[in-house]
Amino acid sequence: MKAFCPSCGVKEGEKEFIDGFCIDCYLKDHELFKIPEEIEIEICSNCQKFRFGKQWIDYTDENIEKLIVSKAESNMDIDDLKVGIYPEEKNVLVKLQIKGRKNEIPLTIRKEIYLKERKVNCPACSRLNGGYFEATLQIRFDKMQRDKERKALLQMHEILNSEREKGDHLAQVIKLEEKKDGFDVQLGSKKAARKISREFTKRYNGKVTFSSSIVTEKKGTPVYRDTFCVRMP
Ligand SMILES: [Zn+2]
Ligand SMILES: [Zn+2]
Image (cartoon, rainbow, N blue to C red; front, side):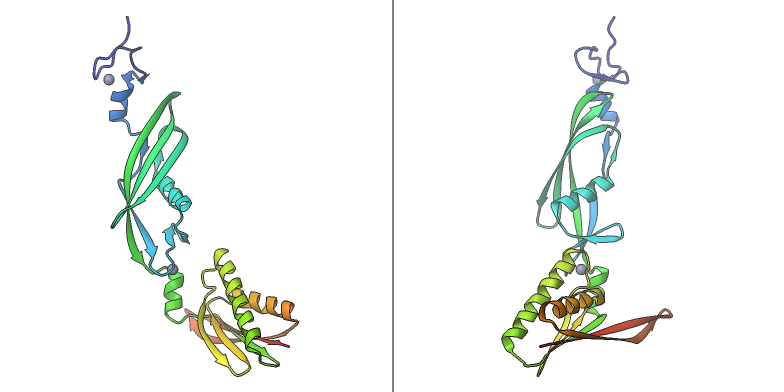
């Protein structure tokens, strides 16, 4: 005698069975892929990065997937996960298709959830908005030529872009001041300032002088502000 599903009466053999129940009844009672219907996501209104744990990362489909997977709880073997992202007026609709197996029985589960976006300022942007900067870069030319200066400015921005891409969020210009033989730039990141001064001395055969001063004491820790003066022929 064949067993039947105690819930709906269907006979074994007519459908797949899991733990004594037909697959449809089993899935009604067991959530094999659990995920909140709504996930709140904090997005920086300045740089568009979003918070992922303690990190702030770029808003890309790949990273959104990472966030979603981190919120999910699975009770099945997953073979394939497809995530479709559909921004709507206020929130973002996310369609999930999970293909996998439970007790070696193949299954496809579909889910729709929402990402609720909350606009905030990420810590780095709030610091920069508050006038925070770590370094001043002084670029000086022996003989002032505007085209040389323009080239140096472009290269500085290129280096800043690549530093930001590498994750140094503070690699930004806070203030730029024209001087009669060059320019002064306040930079959020001292690491980026060092990189630029190094790159400039190499490319232009320039010379760099470095100084550091203590500006404030934050919770007892001295905060250093660095000055890199690059002289270029
Ligand atoms: Zn059933
Ligand atoms: Zn930001």
